[in-house]
Image (cartoon, rainbow, N blue to C red; front, side, top):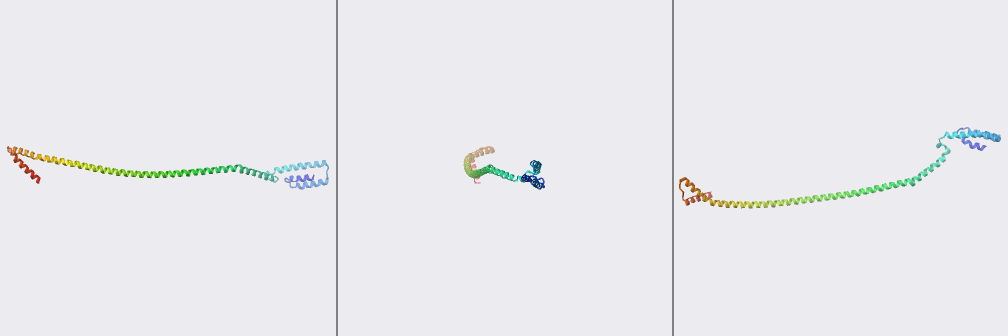
Amino acid sequence: MTGAVLLAAPLSAASDPAAPATLVAQAAQGDHAQPSHGQGTHEGAPGAAAGHAEEGHGKKSHFPPFDGTTFASQLLWLVLSFGLLYLLMSRIALPRIGRILEERHDRIADDLEEAAKHKAESEAAQASYEKALAEARAKANSIAGETRNRLAADSDANRKALEAELADKLAAAEQRIASTKTEALTHVKGIAVDATNTIVNTLIGTTPATADVEQAVDGALARKDAA
């Protein structure tokens, strides 16, 4: 009986500070009085009921996580939960995340390498294009210069040929003019003689001698040439 009362003392201590002293006193009286079996059972039942009621009242008045009697189990479940979470993270989640990061890193590295390759190819193509453009410009300038020189040479040749042709034509014309003039001069004497005969005949009514007219015409032509 004393042991049962002592075991119930911690349960009722939370609600009634004077409960331990009361229970100890009751235990002492019970040891000295030695009541009968029926009386002890009858008196102990209300005390046990009161202890259970006080215990229930004390449990209801405390927040469970702050209950000191459950600290050990809370710590145990905390360690187990943390260990299980750590195991799941280290065995499943973290390796997947690591693989994803590694794949992304490899993909980014491949993309950068591909971009660098395309950049080098574009730079090489641009350099080749600029070289081809410079060569084309140089070739075009050379062709333009050659064409200009050829056209200038052809123009000079054509000009010289035209000048020579014109000179030949001018010389031929001068020769024709000279021959025509010479031929005309051969007929001038006869024309002058005839005209003189006609004029003299018209003026004096008689025709002069042909020899006299020719002599006079020759003298006039000689004086003209001398002048």
